[in-house]
Image 1: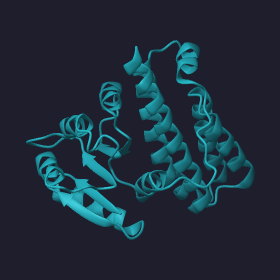
Image 2 (image 1 turned 90 degrees about the horizontal axis):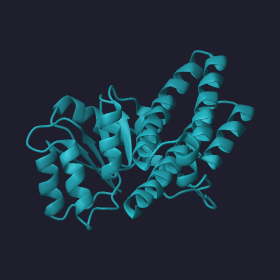
Image 3 (image 1 turned 60 degrees about the horizontal axis):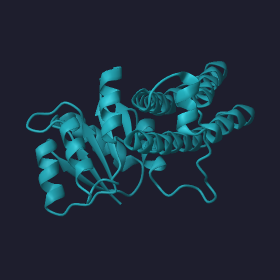
Image 4 (image 1 turned 180 degrees about the vertical axis):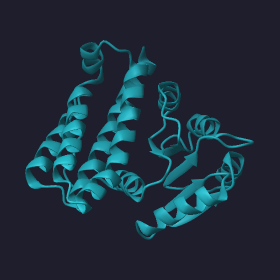
Length: 238
């Protein structure tokens, strides 16, 4: 499985490559900036997933995302934006362009692990069970663009939680881990991610062992991405 890592900062790029490598046997390709990545894609590179920094010279992460989504050859390729900016405007713009997920600096191994798991083949029998996006929008009194931003922000929370919950478990802070899981459960309910909400509820009953937590988080990221895809389709139709 090819993974493309794009970042103009050498140290950040090497750290992210190391984290991807630590998650399993991936064929990792690097690009020095967005233009370098685009040149490699045009030359025939077909990664299974792309991690890209937001702020870069020559071609920014947002500009590369726009090019990738405008080209039918790459429109289905998962594009993960790596950023320290989680303001609503950034999330809305990236979500409207079709970003698949977000990783927030500073990197945590759990963020990378959750995304790689989310983009692997879903477990047998996995079904996206969620409230129709139109119903969620009506209930929250928001439009599709804002729903996409909320789903993007929730993905940030999910991926950040992976490392945080691991750290809580290592310190024996079971109550803090439980509270974090409950907040994520509430987020799923608010955004209409019914299947993911049930998984978090079950997790609270079974404990917070690391692999189990990562699987539930990966499923929730997968659900948020699937719901975002439905919301983009709805927005395009209107």
